Image (cartoon, rainbow, N blue to C red; front, side, top):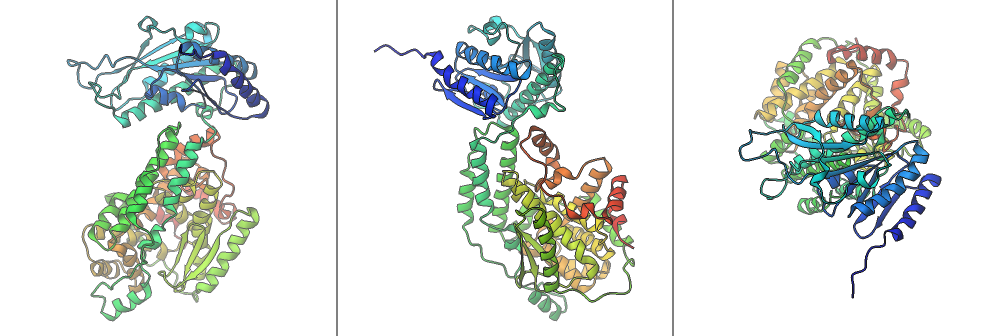
Length: 622
Protein backbone atom coordinates (compact mmCIF):
# COMPACT_ATOMS: atom_id res chain seq x y z
CA UNK A 1 0.00 0.00 0.00
CA UNK A 2 1.36 3.41 -0.94
CA UNK A 3 1.70 6.07 1.77
CA UNK A 4 -1.16 8.51 1.70
CA UNK A 5 -0.19 12.13 1.14
CA UNK A 6 -1.65 14.76 3.43
CA UNK A 7 -4.30 16.76 1.67
CA UNK A 8 -3.66 20.32 2.83
CA UNK A 9 -7.01 21.54 1.59
CA UNK A 10 -8.80 19.11 3.94
CA UNK A 11 -7.38 21.01 6.91
CA UNK A 12 -8.33 24.45 5.71
CA UNK A 13 -12.11 24.07 6.01
CA UNK A 14 -12.23 23.73 9.83
CA UNK A 15 -9.64 26.50 10.14
CA UNK A 16 -11.78 28.75 7.96
CA UNK A 17 -14.78 27.94 10.15
CA UNK A 18 -12.75 28.70 13.27
CA UNK A 19 -11.61 32.05 11.88
CA UNK A 20 -15.18 32.91 11.03
CA UNK A 21 -16.30 32.10 14.60
CA UNK A 22 -13.38 34.09 16.00
CA UNK A 23 -14.27 37.19 14.01
CA UNK A 24 -18.04 36.98 14.45
CA UNK A 25 -18.42 35.51 17.94
CA UNK A 26 -15.04 36.10 19.59
CA UNK A 27 -14.39 32.37 20.07
CA UNK A 28 -10.67 31.56 20.42
CA UNK A 29 -9.15 29.09 17.95
CA UNK A 30 -7.15 26.10 19.14
CA UNK A 31 -7.13 23.75 16.19
CA UNK A 32 -4.90 20.67 15.92
CA UNK A 33 -4.50 19.30 12.41
CA UNK A 34 -2.26 17.16 10.20
CA UNK A 35 -0.93 15.21 13.14
CA UNK A 36 1.53 17.52 14.84
CA UNK A 37 0.29 20.92 13.63
CA UNK A 38 -1.63 23.51 15.64
CA UNK A 39 -3.21 26.92 15.13
CA UNK A 40 -3.89 28.97 18.26
CA UNK A 41 -5.41 32.46 18.18
CA UNK A 42 -7.07 33.73 21.35
CA UNK A 43 -8.54 36.91 19.78
CA UNK A 44 -8.27 38.89 16.52
CA UNK A 45 -4.66 40.07 16.33
CA UNK A 46 -2.55 41.70 13.58
CA UNK A 47 0.21 39.07 13.63
CA UNK A 48 0.95 35.36 13.58
CA UNK A 49 4.09 33.75 15.00
CA UNK A 50 5.05 30.63 13.04
CA UNK A 51 7.32 27.69 13.78
CA UNK A 52 8.10 25.22 11.03
CA UNK A 53 9.65 21.89 11.93
CA UNK A 54 9.15 18.63 13.81
CA UNK A 55 11.22 19.45 16.88
CA UNK A 56 10.44 20.85 20.30
CA UNK A 57 13.21 23.38 20.75
CA UNK A 58 13.37 26.88 22.25
CA UNK A 59 12.00 28.40 19.05
CA UNK A 60 8.96 26.11 19.38
CA UNK A 61 8.46 27.35 22.95
CA UNK A 62 8.86 31.00 21.94
CA UNK A 63 6.25 30.68 19.21
CA UNK A 64 3.78 28.69 21.31
CA UNK A 65 3.96 31.37 24.03
CA UNK A 66 2.28 33.80 21.64
CA UNK A 67 -1.39 34.75 21.68
CA UNK A 68 -1.45 34.01 17.93
CA UNK A 69 0.71 31.16 16.65
CA UNK A 70 1.01 28.37 14.12
CA UNK A 71 3.03 25.18 14.50
CA UNK A 72 3.49 23.31 11.21
CA UNK A 73 5.68 20.41 10.10
CA UNK A 74 6.42 21.86 6.66
CA UNK A 75 6.78 25.24 4.98
CA UNK A 76 4.16 24.66 2.31
CA UNK A 77 1.45 23.69 4.80
CA UNK A 78 2.49 26.58 7.04
CA UNK A 79 2.22 28.94 4.09
CA UNK A 80 -1.29 27.80 3.23
CA UNK A 81 -2.59 28.25 6.76
CA UNK A 82 -0.69 31.49 7.38
CA UNK A 83 -2.10 33.00 4.19
CA UNK A 84 -5.62 32.09 5.26
CA UNK A 85 -5.11 33.70 8.67
CA UNK A 86 -3.42 36.78 7.21
CA UNK A 87 -6.23 37.37 4.73
CA UNK A 88 -8.92 37.12 7.41
CA UNK A 89 -7.10 39.21 10.01
CA UNK A 90 -5.90 41.89 7.61
CA UNK A 91 -9.50 42.84 6.89
CA UNK A 92 -10.23 43.13 10.63
CA UNK A 93 -6.97 44.69 11.84
CA UNK A 94 -5.94 46.82 8.85
CA UNK A 95 -2.53 45.18 8.46
CA UNK A 96 -0.84 41.89 9.28
CA UNK A 97 2.65 40.60 10.04
CA UNK A 98 4.00 37.04 9.89
CA UNK A 99 6.89 36.37 12.30
CA UNK A 100 8.77 33.20 11.31
CA UNK A 101 10.90 32.07 14.27
CA UNK A 102 13.42 29.25 14.19
CA UNK A 103 16.90 28.22 15.26
CA UNK A 104 20.22 28.27 13.47
CA UNK A 105 21.94 24.94 13.02
CA UNK A 106 24.78 25.79 15.39
CA UNK A 107 26.14 28.28 17.88
CA UNK A 108 28.99 29.20 15.53
CA UNK A 109 30.59 31.86 17.74
CA UNK A 110 31.17 29.29 20.50
CA UNK A 111 34.32 27.52 19.32
CA UNK A 112 37.19 25.85 21.12
CA UNK A 113 39.43 28.87 20.59
CA UNK A 114 36.71 31.47 21.28
CA UNK A 115 37.19 33.90 24.16
CA UNK A 116 35.21 33.23 27.31
CA UNK A 117 31.48 33.80 26.83
CA UNK A 118 31.44 35.14 23.26
CA UNK A 119 28.37 36.88 21.78
CA UNK A 120 25.63 34.75 20.30
CA UNK A 121 24.02 35.16 16.92
CA UNK A 122 20.55 36.40 16.04
CA UNK A 123 19.87 36.64 12.31
CA UNK A 124 16.98 38.69 10.92
CA UNK A 125 15.42 39.27 7.51
CA UNK A 126 12.41 41.30 6.44
CA UNK A 127 10.70 42.87 3.48
CA UNK A 128 11.31 46.28 1.97
CA UNK A 129 8.17 48.04 3.14
CA UNK A 130 8.46 50.79 5.73
CA UNK A 131 6.43 48.77 8.24
CA UNK A 132 8.55 45.63 7.82
CA UNK A 133 11.74 47.63 8.22
CA UNK A 134 10.35 49.20 11.38
CA UNK A 135 9.49 45.75 12.76
CA UNK A 136 12.96 44.39 12.01
CA UNK A 137 14.66 47.42 13.53
CA UNK A 138 12.61 47.20 16.73
CA UNK A 139 13.15 43.45 17.06
CA UNK A 140 16.90 43.94 16.64
CA UNK A 141 16.99 46.73 19.22
CA UNK A 142 14.89 44.81 21.75
CA UNK A 143 16.79 41.55 21.38
CA UNK A 144 20.18 43.28 21.61
CA UNK A 145 19.36 44.83 24.99
CA UNK A 146 18.94 41.52 26.77
CA UNK A 147 21.81 39.31 27.80
CA UNK A 148 21.43 35.56 28.16
CA UNK A 149 23.66 34.51 31.06
CA UNK A 150 26.21 37.16 30.13
CA UNK A 151 26.36 36.32 26.42
CA UNK A 152 25.37 39.43 24.50
CA UNK A 153 23.26 39.02 21.35
CA UNK A 154 24.89 40.03 18.08
CA UNK A 155 22.16 40.79 15.55
CA UNK A 156 22.96 40.41 11.86
CA UNK A 157 21.40 39.67 8.48
CA UNK A 158 19.89 36.28 7.83
CA UNK A 159 21.26 34.24 4.92
CA UNK A 160 18.41 32.17 3.46
CA UNK A 161 20.81 30.28 1.18
CA UNK A 162 21.82 28.16 4.17
CA UNK A 163 18.36 26.52 4.21
CA UNK A 164 17.24 23.86 1.77
CA UNK A 165 13.51 24.20 2.48
CA UNK A 166 11.82 27.37 1.24
CA UNK A 167 11.18 30.02 3.85
CA UNK A 168 7.76 31.43 4.60
CA UNK A 169 8.86 34.78 3.21
CA UNK A 170 9.51 33.03 -0.14
CA UNK A 171 6.06 31.46 -0.12
CA UNK A 172 4.16 34.48 1.21
CA UNK A 173 5.83 37.07 -1.00
CA UNK A 174 2.87 39.43 -0.87
CA UNK A 175 2.42 39.31 2.93
CA UNK A 176 4.67 41.28 5.33
CA UNK A 177 7.04 38.86 7.03
CA UNK A 178 9.85 39.01 9.58
CA UNK A 179 12.24 36.04 9.68
CA UNK A 180 14.08 35.36 12.94
CA UNK A 181 16.78 32.76 13.54
CA UNK A 182 18.88 32.51 16.69
CA UNK A 183 21.79 30.39 17.82
CA UNK A 184 20.89 27.46 20.10
CA UNK A 185 23.07 28.73 22.95
CA UNK A 186 21.02 26.80 25.50
CA UNK A 187 22.33 23.48 24.16
CA UNK A 188 25.33 21.97 25.90
CA UNK A 189 28.37 21.51 23.59
CA UNK A 190 28.55 18.10 22.00
CA UNK A 191 24.80 17.53 22.11
CA UNK A 192 24.91 16.51 25.77
CA UNK A 193 21.67 18.06 26.93
CA UNK A 194 20.46 21.59 27.53
CA UNK A 195 20.64 24.38 30.10
CA UNK A 196 16.97 24.90 31.14
CA UNK A 197 17.45 28.31 32.79
CA UNK A 198 19.31 29.62 29.75
CA UNK A 199 16.60 28.23 27.49
CA UNK A 200 13.98 30.13 29.49
CA UNK A 201 15.93 33.38 29.08
CA UNK A 202 16.21 32.90 25.32
CA UNK A 203 12.49 32.17 25.02
CA UNK A 204 11.58 35.26 27.06
CA UNK A 205 13.84 37.40 24.85
CA UNK A 206 12.25 36.13 21.65
CA UNK A 207 8.69 36.52 22.94
CA UNK A 208 9.19 40.08 24.16
CA UNK A 209 11.15 41.17 21.08
CA UNK A 210 8.45 39.79 18.77
CA UNK A 211 5.72 41.76 20.54
CA UNK A 212 7.80 44.92 20.34
CA UNK A 213 8.28 44.30 16.62
CA UNK A 214 4.52 44.01 16.11
CA UNK A 215 3.97 47.27 17.99
CA UNK A 216 6.49 49.07 15.75
CA UNK A 217 4.93 47.47 12.65
CA UNK A 218 1.49 48.81 13.57
CA UNK A 219 2.81 52.29 14.26
CA UNK A 220 4.68 52.37 10.94
CA UNK A 221 1.51 51.16 9.20
CA UNK A 222 -0.19 54.28 10.59
CA UNK A 223 -2.45 52.13 12.73
CA UNK A 224 -3.08 52.60 16.42
CA UNK A 225 -0.30 50.93 18.35
CA UNK A 226 -1.02 49.48 21.82
CA UNK A 227 -0.11 51.56 24.86
CA UNK A 228 2.25 48.72 25.79
CA UNK A 229 3.49 45.92 23.55
CA UNK A 230 2.71 43.47 26.33
CA UNK A 231 -1.01 43.98 25.77
CA UNK A 232 -0.51 41.95 22.58
CA UNK A 233 0.20 38.87 24.71
CA UNK A 234 -2.10 36.07 25.75
CA UNK A 235 -5.49 36.76 27.26
CA UNK A 236 -6.66 33.16 27.63
CA UNK A 237 -5.50 30.46 30.02
CA UNK A 238 -5.12 27.16 28.21
CA UNK A 239 -6.34 23.99 29.93
CA UNK A 240 -2.82 22.95 30.92
CA UNK A 241 -2.37 26.16 32.95
CA UNK A 242 -5.73 25.77 34.69
CA UNK A 243 -4.96 22.12 35.46
CA UNK A 244 -1.51 22.84 36.92
CA UNK A 245 -2.87 25.75 38.96
CA UNK A 246 -5.69 23.58 40.30
CA UNK A 247 -3.39 20.69 41.21
CA UNK A 248 -0.88 22.93 42.99
CA UNK A 249 -3.74 24.55 44.89
CA UNK A 250 -4.90 21.12 46.07
CA UNK A 251 -1.55 20.66 47.78
CA UNK A 252 -1.59 24.21 49.18
CA UNK A 253 -5.09 23.61 50.56
CA UNK A 254 -4.10 20.35 52.26
CA UNK A 255 -2.54 22.25 55.17
CA UNK A 256 -2.58 25.61 56.91
CA UNK A 257 1.06 26.46 57.37
CA UNK A 258 0.67 29.16 60.04
CA UNK A 259 -1.77 27.15 62.14
CA UNK A 260 0.50 24.12 61.91
CA UNK A 261 3.52 25.99 63.31
CA UNK A 262 1.63 27.97 65.99
CA UNK A 263 1.38 26.52 69.53
CA UNK A 264 -2.03 25.65 70.93
CA UNK A 265 -1.09 26.25 74.57
CA UNK A 266 0.12 29.87 74.52
CA UNK A 267 -1.72 30.95 77.68
CA UNK A 268 -0.59 27.92 79.68
CA UNK A 269 2.97 28.46 78.40
CA UNK A 270 2.92 32.03 79.73
CA UNK A 271 1.75 30.90 83.15
CA UNK A 272 4.50 28.27 83.33
CA UNK A 273 7.14 30.72 82.12
CA UNK A 274 6.02 33.25 84.74
CA UNK A 275 5.90 30.65 87.49
CA UNK A 276 9.45 29.60 86.65
CA UNK A 277 10.79 33.09 87.14
CA UNK A 278 11.20 33.65 83.40
CA UNK A 279 14.29 31.42 83.45
CA UNK A 280 13.20 28.39 81.41
CA UNK A 281 11.48 28.17 78.04
CA UNK A 282 8.04 26.59 78.53
CA UNK A 283 7.00 23.46 76.64
CA UNK A 284 4.93 24.27 73.56
CA UNK A 285 2.31 21.99 72.04
CA UNK A 286 1.27 21.85 68.38
CA UNK A 287 -1.54 20.47 66.29
CA UNK A 288 -0.78 17.02 64.86
CA UNK A 289 -0.37 17.04 61.09
CA UNK A 290 -3.36 15.51 59.32
CA UNK A 291 -1.37 14.43 56.27
CA UNK A 292 1.87 12.72 55.26
CA UNK A 293 4.48 15.25 54.17
CA UNK A 294 6.06 12.82 51.70
CA UNK A 295 2.67 12.11 50.13
CA UNK A 296 1.97 15.80 49.59
CA UNK A 297 5.44 16.29 48.12
CA UNK A 298 4.83 13.50 45.64
CA UNK A 299 1.56 15.14 44.64
CA UNK A 300 3.31 18.50 44.36
CA UNK A 301 5.99 17.30 41.98
CA UNK A 302 3.61 15.17 39.96
CA UNK A 303 2.18 18.46 38.67
CA UNK A 304 3.61 18.96 35.19
CA UNK A 305 4.61 22.49 34.23
CA UNK A 306 5.54 21.50 30.68
CA UNK A 307 3.57 22.78 27.71
CA UNK A 308 1.92 25.68 29.55
CA UNK A 309 2.73 27.94 26.57
CA UNK A 310 3.20 30.96 28.81
CA UNK A 311 6.65 31.51 30.37
CA UNK A 312 5.36 34.03 32.91
CA UNK A 313 2.65 31.74 34.27
CA UNK A 314 4.98 28.74 34.19
CA UNK A 315 7.46 30.73 36.26
CA UNK A 316 4.85 31.75 38.83
CA UNK A 317 3.64 28.17 39.23
CA UNK A 318 7.20 26.83 39.48
CA UNK A 319 8.04 29.36 42.21
CA UNK A 320 4.91 28.35 44.14
CA UNK A 321 5.80 24.70 43.76
CA UNK A 322 9.23 25.36 45.29
CA UNK A 323 7.79 27.44 48.14
CA UNK A 324 5.27 24.73 49.05
CA UNK A 325 8.08 22.18 49.00
CA UNK A 326 10.01 24.32 51.49
CA UNK A 327 6.96 24.78 53.73
CA UNK A 328 6.33 21.03 53.75
CA UNK A 329 9.97 20.43 54.66
CA UNK A 330 9.57 22.88 57.56
CA UNK A 331 6.49 21.08 58.83
CA UNK A 332 8.40 17.81 58.79
CA UNK A 333 11.16 19.51 60.80
CA UNK A 334 8.99 21.12 63.52
CA UNK A 335 10.72 21.37 66.91
CA UNK A 336 14.14 20.57 65.44
CA UNK A 337 17.09 22.87 64.60
CA UNK A 338 16.42 22.27 60.89
CA UNK A 339 13.14 24.19 61.16
CA UNK A 340 14.91 27.50 61.81
CA UNK A 341 17.39 26.99 58.98
CA UNK A 342 14.64 26.11 56.52
CA UNK A 343 12.79 29.20 57.73
CA UNK A 344 15.88 31.26 57.00
CA UNK A 345 15.76 29.94 53.43
CA UNK A 346 12.06 30.82 53.16
CA UNK A 347 12.04 34.26 54.79
CA UNK A 348 15.68 35.31 54.66
CA UNK A 349 18.03 36.55 57.35
CA UNK A 350 17.72 39.89 59.09
CA UNK A 351 19.66 42.45 57.07
CA UNK A 352 21.95 44.79 59.06
CA UNK A 353 20.03 47.79 57.71
CA UNK A 354 16.72 46.33 58.89
CA UNK A 355 18.13 45.58 62.34
CA UNK A 356 19.49 49.14 62.59
CA UNK A 357 16.10 50.54 61.62
CA UNK A 358 14.41 48.38 64.28
CA UNK A 359 16.86 49.59 66.91
CA UNK A 360 16.14 53.18 65.93
CA UNK A 361 12.40 52.65 66.33
CA UNK A 362 12.80 51.07 69.76
CA UNK A 363 14.93 54.02 70.81
CA UNK A 364 12.83 56.83 69.34
CA UNK A 365 9.39 55.39 70.11
CA UNK A 366 10.04 55.12 73.85
CA UNK A 367 7.82 57.33 75.99
CA UNK A 368 5.41 58.27 73.19
CA UNK A 369 2.51 56.26 74.57
CA UNK A 370 -0.46 58.17 76.06
CA UNK A 371 -0.68 57.90 79.84
CA UNK A 372 -4.42 57.20 80.05
CA UNK A 373 -5.48 53.70 79.06
CA UNK A 374 -9.02 52.61 78.27
CA UNK A 375 -10.62 49.32 79.14
CA UNK A 376 -9.63 46.63 76.63
CA UNK A 377 -12.07 44.88 74.30
CA UNK A 378 -12.46 41.13 74.63
CA UNK A 379 -12.75 38.46 71.95
CA UNK A 380 -16.54 38.71 71.69
CA UNK A 381 -16.47 42.47 71.05
CA UNK A 382 -13.66 42.14 68.51
CA UNK A 383 -15.48 39.31 66.71
CA UNK A 384 -18.72 41.32 66.59
CA UNK A 385 -16.92 44.32 65.06
CA UNK A 386 -15.21 42.02 62.57
CA UNK A 387 -18.55 40.57 61.45
CA UNK A 388 -19.90 44.08 60.92
CA UNK A 389 -16.93 45.02 58.71
CA UNK A 390 -17.22 41.78 56.74
CA UNK A 391 -20.93 42.46 56.21
CA UNK A 392 -20.06 45.83 54.64
CA UNK A 393 -17.63 44.19 52.23
CA UNK A 394 -20.19 41.49 51.44
CA UNK A 395 -22.77 44.19 50.65
CA UNK A 396 -20.36 45.51 48.02
CA UNK A 397 -19.55 42.01 46.72
CA UNK A 398 -21.68 38.97 47.65
CA UNK A 399 -18.69 36.69 46.98
CA UNK A 400 -16.96 38.07 50.08
CA UNK A 401 -18.01 35.02 52.11
CA UNK A 402 -15.73 35.30 55.12
CA UNK A 403 -16.47 33.83 58.52
CA UNK A 404 -15.33 34.75 62.04
CA UNK A 405 -14.43 32.12 64.63
CA UNK A 406 -13.42 32.56 68.27
CA UNK A 407 -10.77 29.96 69.12
CA UNK A 408 -9.23 28.79 72.36
CA UNK A 409 -6.20 27.18 70.70
CA UNK A 410 -4.49 30.37 69.49
CA UNK A 411 -2.22 32.95 71.12
CA UNK A 412 -3.89 36.29 71.84
CA UNK A 413 -4.68 38.18 68.65
CA UNK A 414 -6.22 37.57 65.23
CA UNK A 415 -5.18 35.30 62.38
CA UNK A 416 -6.55 34.83 58.85
CA UNK A 417 -6.79 31.29 57.54
CA UNK A 418 -8.00 31.34 53.92
CA UNK A 419 -11.54 32.79 54.16
CA UNK A 420 -11.75 32.63 57.96
CA UNK A 421 -10.84 35.24 60.53
CA UNK A 422 -9.78 33.46 63.71
CA UNK A 423 -9.99 35.42 66.98
CA UNK A 424 -8.18 34.09 70.02
CA UNK A 425 -10.33 33.74 73.12
CA UNK A 426 -7.45 35.41 75.02
CA UNK A 427 -7.55 38.58 72.90
CA UNK A 428 -7.50 41.87 74.82
CA UNK A 429 -7.46 44.88 72.52
CA UNK A 430 -7.31 48.61 73.22
CA UNK A 431 -10.32 50.33 71.59
CA UNK A 432 -8.09 52.71 69.59
CA UNK A 433 -6.47 49.65 67.97
CA UNK A 434 -9.69 47.97 66.85
CA UNK A 435 -10.12 49.63 63.44
CA UNK A 436 -6.41 49.28 62.72
CA UNK A 437 -6.37 45.56 63.44
CA UNK A 438 -9.56 44.86 61.47
CA UNK A 439 -8.24 46.88 58.53
CA UNK A 440 -5.05 44.81 58.72
CA UNK A 441 -6.77 41.42 58.78
CA UNK A 442 -9.98 42.06 56.80
CA UNK A 443 -9.09 45.04 54.63
CA UNK A 444 -5.85 43.45 53.40
CA UNK A 445 -5.57 39.70 54.10
CA UNK A 446 -9.19 38.68 53.51
CA UNK A 447 -9.74 41.22 50.73
CA UNK A 448 -6.78 39.96 48.68
CA UNK A 449 -7.92 36.38 49.26
CA UNK A 450 -11.31 37.06 47.70
CA UNK A 451 -9.97 39.37 44.98
CA UNK A 452 -7.44 36.69 44.05
CA UNK A 453 -10.16 34.07 44.01
CA UNK A 454 -12.02 36.08 41.36
CA UNK A 455 -9.06 36.14 38.95
CA UNK A 456 -9.30 32.56 37.76
CA UNK A 457 -5.91 31.52 39.17
CA UNK A 458 -5.93 29.87 42.59
CA UNK A 459 -2.33 30.89 43.31
CA UNK A 460 -3.46 34.52 43.44
CA UNK A 461 -5.82 33.51 46.25
CA UNK A 462 -3.41 31.33 48.22
CA UNK A 463 -0.51 33.65 47.42
CA UNK A 464 2.34 33.84 44.94
CA UNK A 465 5.71 32.73 46.25
CA UNK A 466 7.15 35.26 48.68
CA UNK A 467 3.92 37.25 48.95
CA UNK A 468 3.87 37.51 52.75
CA UNK A 469 6.35 40.37 53.07
CA UNK A 470 4.36 42.73 50.87
CA UNK A 471 1.08 41.53 52.40
CA UNK A 472 2.22 42.34 55.91
CA UNK A 473 3.71 45.63 54.73
CA UNK A 474 0.37 46.63 53.22
CA UNK A 475 -1.40 45.50 56.38
CA UNK A 476 0.87 47.61 58.58
CA UNK A 477 0.31 50.56 56.24
CA UNK A 478 -3.44 50.02 56.68
CA UNK A 479 -3.04 50.37 60.44
CA UNK A 480 -1.36 53.73 59.91
CA UNK A 481 -3.88 54.97 57.34
CA UNK A 482 -6.81 54.49 59.71
CA UNK A 483 -4.97 56.31 62.49
CA UNK A 484 -4.24 53.28 64.65
CA UNK A 485 -0.46 53.00 64.56
CA UNK A 486 0.56 53.48 68.17
CA UNK A 487 4.09 53.67 69.53
CA UNK A 488 3.55 50.36 71.34
CA UNK A 489 2.50 48.64 68.13
CA UNK A 490 5.46 49.92 66.13
CA UNK A 491 7.80 48.94 68.96
CA UNK A 492 6.41 45.40 68.82
CA UNK A 493 7.01 45.26 65.07
CA UNK A 494 10.59 46.44 65.61
CA UNK A 495 11.10 44.04 68.51
CA UNK A 496 10.10 41.13 66.28
CA UNK A 497 12.97 41.98 63.93
CA UNK A 498 15.55 41.93 66.72
CA UNK A 499 14.06 38.76 68.20
CA UNK A 500 14.35 37.07 64.80
CA UNK A 501 17.95 38.21 64.52
CA UNK A 502 18.75 36.87 67.99
CA UNK A 503 17.06 33.53 67.29
CA UNK A 504 18.88 33.08 63.97
CA UNK A 505 22.16 33.96 65.70
CA UNK A 506 21.62 31.15 68.21
CA UNK A 507 20.12 32.92 71.24
CA UNK A 508 17.79 30.92 73.49
CA UNK A 509 14.14 31.68 74.27
CA UNK A 510 14.78 33.05 77.76
CA UNK A 511 17.82 35.08 76.62
CA UNK A 512 15.83 36.82 73.92
CA UNK A 513 13.03 37.50 76.40
CA UNK A 514 15.47 39.18 78.80
CA UNK A 515 16.89 41.38 76.03
CA UNK A 516 13.44 42.58 74.95
CA UNK A 517 12.30 43.22 78.50
CA UNK A 518 15.43 44.51 80.22
CA UNK A 519 17.24 46.22 77.35
CA UNK A 520 14.36 47.52 75.24
CA UNK A 521 11.69 48.10 77.85
CA UNK A 522 8.89 45.83 76.64
CA UNK A 523 6.62 44.71 79.46
CA UNK A 524 6.99 41.04 80.35
CA UNK A 525 3.82 39.83 78.63
CA UNK A 526 4.53 41.72 75.41
CA UNK A 527 8.12 40.46 75.37
CA UNK A 528 6.88 36.91 75.92
CA UNK A 529 4.36 37.17 73.07
CA UNK A 530 7.08 38.36 70.67
CA UNK A 531 9.49 35.63 71.72
CA UNK A 532 6.77 32.98 71.54
CA UNK A 533 6.04 33.96 67.93
CA UNK A 534 9.70 33.90 66.95
CA UNK A 535 10.66 30.64 68.69
CA UNK A 536 7.57 28.63 67.75
CA UNK A 537 8.17 25.22 66.16
CA UNK A 538 11.94 25.55 66.60
CA UNK A 539 12.53 29.12 65.41
CA UNK A 540 10.32 30.98 62.94
CA UNK A 541 12.00 33.78 60.97
CA UNK A 542 8.77 35.18 59.51
CA UNK A 543 8.28 38.06 61.92
CA UNK A 544 11.02 40.23 60.43
CA UNK A 545 8.86 40.67 57.32
CA UNK A 546 6.44 43.14 58.95
CA UNK A 547 8.98 45.94 59.20
CA UNK A 548 10.77 44.88 56.01
CA UNK A 549 7.44 44.84 54.18
CA UNK A 550 6.25 48.26 55.29
CA UNK A 551 9.62 49.74 54.31
CA UNK A 552 9.12 48.23 50.83
CA UNK A 553 5.61 49.66 50.61
CA UNK A 554 6.72 53.13 51.69
CA UNK A 555 9.59 53.05 49.17
CA UNK A 556 7.13 51.97 46.47
CA UNK A 557 4.80 54.87 47.27
CA UNK A 558 7.64 57.39 47.47
CA UNK A 559 8.77 56.31 43.99
CA UNK A 560 5.32 56.99 42.55
CA UNK A 561 4.09 53.40 42.57
CA UNK A 562 0.42 52.49 42.64
CA UNK A 563 -1.12 50.22 45.28
CA UNK A 564 -3.86 48.97 42.94
CA UNK A 565 -1.98 45.93 41.53
CA UNK A 566 -1.41 44.68 45.06
CA UNK A 567 -5.16 44.38 45.66
CA UNK A 568 -5.55 41.95 42.71
CA UNK A 569 -4.43 39.07 44.91
CA UNK A 570 -1.64 38.01 47.22
CA UNK A 571 1.54 39.04 45.40
CA UNK A 572 5.08 40.03 46.34
CA UNK A 573 7.00 43.17 45.47
CA UNK A 574 9.03 41.12 42.98
CA UNK A 575 5.84 40.25 41.10
CA UNK A 576 4.67 43.83 40.60
CA UNK A 577 5.94 43.97 37.01
CA UNK A 578 4.55 40.54 36.17
CA UNK A 579 1.11 41.41 37.52
CA UNK A 580 1.19 44.68 35.57
CA UNK A 581 2.00 42.75 32.39
CA UNK A 582 -0.69 40.11 32.94
CA UNK A 583 -3.17 42.92 33.56
CA UNK A 584 -2.08 44.71 30.38
CA UNK A 585 -2.60 41.47 28.45
CA UNK A 586 -6.11 41.17 29.83
CA UNK A 587 -5.40 37.91 31.69
CA UNK A 588 -6.15 39.63 34.99
CA UNK A 589 -9.04 41.91 35.80
CA UNK A 590 -9.02 45.00 37.94
CA UNK A 591 -9.56 44.12 41.62
CA UNK A 592 -13.24 43.62 42.43
CA UNK A 593 -12.85 45.40 45.75
CA UNK A 594 -10.47 47.99 47.11
CA UNK A 595 -9.92 48.37 50.85
CA UNK A 596 -12.62 50.52 52.43
CA UNK A 597 -10.04 52.37 54.49
CA UNK A 598 -8.48 53.91 51.35
CA UNK A 599 -11.55 56.07 50.76
CA UNK A 600 -11.95 57.20 54.36
CA UNK A 601 -11.44 60.82 55.34
CA UNK A 602 -8.75 59.91 57.87
CA UNK A 603 -6.74 57.90 55.32
CA UNK A 604 -6.42 60.45 52.50
CA UNK A 605 -4.02 62.91 54.16
CA UNK A 606 -1.97 60.06 55.60
CA UNK A 607 -1.67 58.36 52.20
CA UNK A 608 -0.62 61.67 50.67
CA UNK A 609 2.04 61.97 53.35
CA UNK A 610 3.27 58.44 52.64
CA UNK A 611 3.47 59.17 48.91
CA UNK A 612 5.58 62.25 49.63
CA UNK A 613 8.05 60.06 51.50
CA UNK A 614 8.16 58.95 55.10
CA UNK A 615 9.93 56.60 57.49
CA UNK A 616 8.08 53.97 59.55
CA UNK A 617 8.77 55.96 62.72
CA UNK A 618 6.70 58.80 61.23
CA UNK A 619 3.59 56.59 61.26
CA UNK A 620 3.13 56.85 65.01
CA UNK A 621 0.00 58.75 66.02
CA UNK A 622 0.82 61.23 68.80
